[in-house]
Every structure is written in C-alpha cells, then in structure tokens.
Length: 147
Image (cartoon, rainbow, N blue to C red; front, top):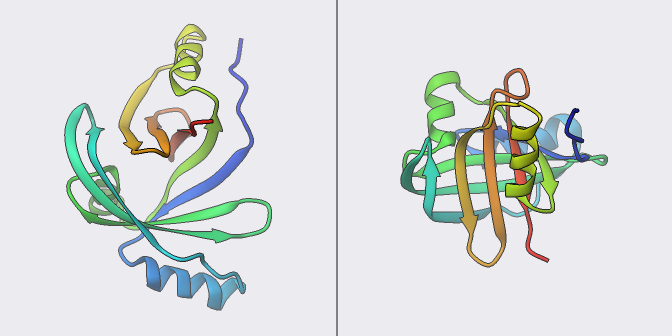
C-alpha cells in the first residue's frame, strides 16, 4: 500500500550565492526573497558520518509554495557535495510530517528503500532528513516541527 505524501511545502535549490540568486528571482519573476538566515548544524549526519555544517537559507514565496535558496557556508554537507557534483539546481522537495521516524517506518513497511543522506536537528526548532532514491532526481526532505 502506498504511503500518503503530504502537501509540498517547498523546493530546495542549492546555489553558490544566495544573495545573487534572490536578486535573480526578484528581477525575473517579481518575487522577493525573505531575509537570509544562517544555521549551524553541529551534530548532523551526512552519509552516516558526523559533520559540523553551516549554511545560509533564504525563502522565496511564490504564492502556492516556496523556493528555499541554500548556500553552503562551511563543512562537508549535502549542499557542498551537490554543488561539486552537479552545480547549482534543485536539491530537494520538502514535506512536513508529524513524526519523521514513524513516516520512515511506514516507508520501510511498504517496501520502499530508506536511504538517509542527511539527518540534522535544529536546536529548539525541529529535525529534518534528506532521503535519496524516492523522487527521480531530487532528494525528499522530511521536516518534523515540534508542537
């Protein structure tokens, strides 16, 4: 039985310069990006290895959903690896779920491969994971936000 997919929250796009990408969105499409914010993810797992990652994020509200611009700042991360391997582009499709572990269990029970590329907790704000092999190209991001 298929696992229900929640509504798409945002599309994550990795870029080398989030300010330039935000200016490009505004010039081309007339949509302004929100203020940038930096996140440090000191105890994340990237391909199963502990890493200390930091990145700059900006959200562009397109009306029905959002585009998340992600600029790697330091550390080996899914973002820096993506830029090295593919250049800038769509990295992930993001969905909010109530509990990540329960959703992953549901995928496993349905016989789906669960290849966790990245697992990170934002202190006091929640957890997110990137899953490979489920979307014909981009990773699937599951976001869990504490109630």
